[in-house]
Image (cartoon, rainbow, N blue to C red):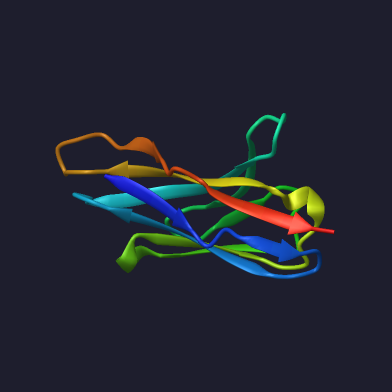
Length: 120
């Protein structure tokens, strides 16, 4: 199983950006998915969570600006980021709870991260 994030780039403050995280490989089911971010010198933090059924939750710092969504048929999760601020600058990672086969328990997988830089 591989998780690959994409969409990170340099954007101006106040701008918008969409990230994508796609899971590939032998997959029976993708359960909960979490977007994390890690800024230089800081701990990794949860940004947004989406259950398989579409229930979502957000960090206070991004509520009203970020939207997480998913396409279960494509094993893909998205993060739409609006009204970006310089403090949103970080490497963004997705983490997904995935079951590979019907005979296995699910486990968490990480992507490699994608850099988002917001200039002031």
